[in-house]
Amino acid sequence: MNRVERGIYIQSLDGTMGESAKTGVAGGRAEPAAKPEKYQRILDAAISVIAQKGFFQARVSEIADRAGVADGTIYLYFRSKEQILMAAIDSAFDAFLERARHEARDTALPAAQRLRRLCQLHLEHLGANRNLALMFQTELRQSTRFLAQFSRTRLVEYFELIRSVIRDGQRAGDFRAGIPEKIAANCFFGAVDEMVTSWMLSEHDYPLAGATDAVMDVILKGMEQGKTAG
Image (cartoon, rainbow, N blue to C red; front, side, top):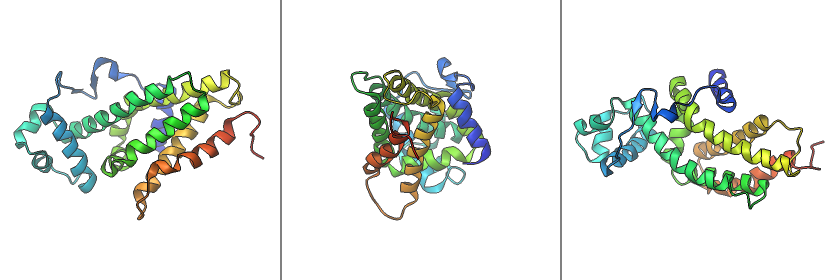
């Protein structure tokens, strides 16, 4: 991740990039009120084609062919290839966020266990679909504009869920209060995100979610009371 991308992530942590999601329009992209089966086929096809060829090399005609629709059908739902990419990413991440909200807000569980479940969910979600992982880890980050658009909506909510769990752990006395929640959330996301990238680039096929315990062992030892480093 370059310096500009890091800045975008930091802004998303602070929640300073705005919330265009409230309007239902992100970057001038209006989502259809109803999403028929063809719409989802186009999104699935886009993930497959763009992951294999890259955003700039993929053609709308190839996406249409993979989805089994006419080229013109694509333009009933999307004005550009960029809109297809962002809609595909948003749709996939929305499914993840729905489950992440449930895990983060399950206050019957201690904060450490909720963080562990978020980590496992993140790794399971991307580990189940390598094409989707390629979209998130590479294609989304090819463009500062794409990344900014995603950061100001879905990503900022994900970071807030992580931070809310960390705050709960600090209030309960399970996590050290002296650790800024924003830094802790950034470390959590960075560790999980790097595991996805390493898995995606690896020549070996292994279950990504199997790294959950090791990742959380490192993170929690730095956060929990009485487990300071040194």
